[in-house]
Image 1 (spheres, rainbow, N blue to C red):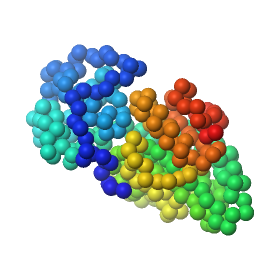
Image 2 (image 1 turned 90 degrees about the vertical axis):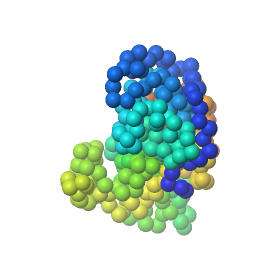
Image 3 (image 1 turned 120 degrees about the horizontal axis):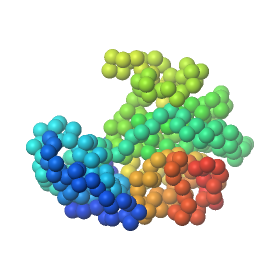
Length: 312
């Protein structure tokens, strides 16, 4: 799989964002045309938001214009561009494909932490893994597949790996067990592959778990921790756009896709959920974020717990 944004070379460059009726349409007038470092107008936002929608399926509401300005202003400084006219011209020009990855990376949100929404990891340990053990009883080479879809910088898949090793114990050695971690942001993919985090980023890991599964190191001259080899052997990190072709075949026993669907419009959510159902084994589990639900989106799942769904 390439290390750039899938499909970037074939982008039609739109002039406006397709409107989602559910999105708020108000935008503070002060965002546009005011005195600031880079002149920024509505048509700049609409072109950039349209590209993000087409590339990643993420629908930016008009009130996100200030966020777009703040994040891309840093990029304009790096490129030494005079204004957003020049940046939009770059995106639409012959060299625009090279800039697309930076655009997506800058505008996708990457909030994550270890053991975030801990009840999901409790359910993984108490229900999913024992069930998978039962399903594989008597097989000479039992199989387990987990997927962290929208893994950000990696705390989620490594938390899954910690639970897996703790629950399965020495018996895990005879299993064909793998955790796939994917994200559209190539910077986050690189960070997850390295598996090194500042001390401020590991506060969710219980001390005993941290002592068992991590190694002290340094990051940028500051104290940090690295994920141990036992975890890294289980986790494979790849770039993936959830609205593009999925090269893996499954089936997965459980998929974590938390706080990702909220950035898609309704057709995008329905497409991704349908594909998740296709990738899960019968009875497999889908974990969503605390503000997400399948109500009115899909009838392919039944609820198994708070923001936990089971494929029918």
